[in-house]
Image (tube, rainbow, N blue to C red):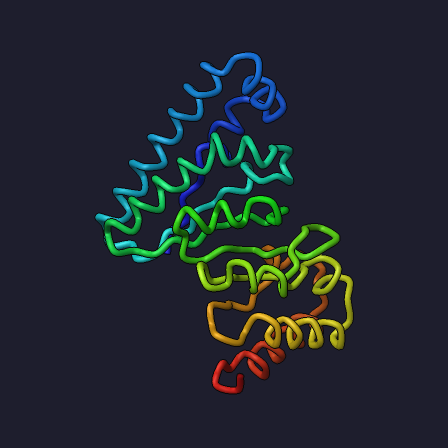
Length: 215
């Protein structure tokens, strides 16, 4: 698996301030399109080289495009979804798989993302940081895409108790495990100062509850 960053992620979003880019969408659309198209072409070239080198999974990093960054669902669908679809199509043309990453709000974009053909959607961040209702989402798009993540890295993993960690993992498996298409995980990478006992509780709960044959 290789991480490939989107046209905005540390690309156009680093070359120009994100707030300015959001204004450009309305006040200077040619500049907006030209800048993001430049990095879109770069992303596609990087991906093609990776696939020709034998990459079997592409980890598509798109969180700068997230609604949590300030974009609207309409802009996401109009401006970004075609790029996602083109990226996914390129990956699939080489027989590889696509893992889509957005650690922010997904409730208003997840069906758009699933419609682009991604194989995996993460990080399924629950409230209060995100807006992911695992039960509702499993019913809505669970047959289209594998879901990955969900365990809150801050309020459960870092600030919670081992008991809370165990309960959250177990409940997530009970909700999303039946029928497959579910990868238990966290809402992002583990943060510093996460208690050792919570880390141990997480891994033990995953091993204990993560067997699909029990469901």
